[in-house]
Length: 245
Image (cartoon, rainbow, N blue to C red; front, side, top):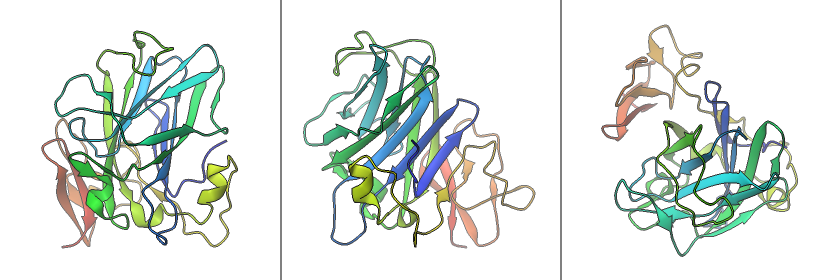
């Protein structure tokens, strides 16, 4: 099952999909649901809720013993192996699956919108957030049965922007229960794709809203569509087209 995610990122090149769903804005909440889909052949994958490795809430995850999934919160203040962190409560939801081709991990994280050194959307849950995802396509973790296992550095990473105002869902409680939710009356999904597809809705040579427009190693468009400006949101690694002149 796929989340009817209000904000998603799809990476066809790496065969990965990331989804994020938040509860309604009122009453205030400190939780969200994340979905990560990646090939079962990968050693491990991960998500950074702050868009970088250091001073961000991290979720490495992997499959083991045929049909089990490991996921837990980690943190580091440097570019070294992150370690388990106290505070967040992570619950793997029953709709998570492992089959012969993919891991589909759907987990709830409570007490997770603020962490040491940062917060989701820089504290504005109705604004814009930059997340990152990583993968180790060949090398697995040292001990797959240990949630605190060490692992080697990933060999792939990318960023994506999320319009958090579009990620809040009235079906949140149904997702928590493992259901698929409903789209009735919900806003259209806000989709942020990787460079191969982010220019589909923008004029030739111009990037669309929340698409990447710069950063380390970026070879795509650096000009934003009309009404947007290129903002360095995680310098020097990632810049994104955001509303503004």
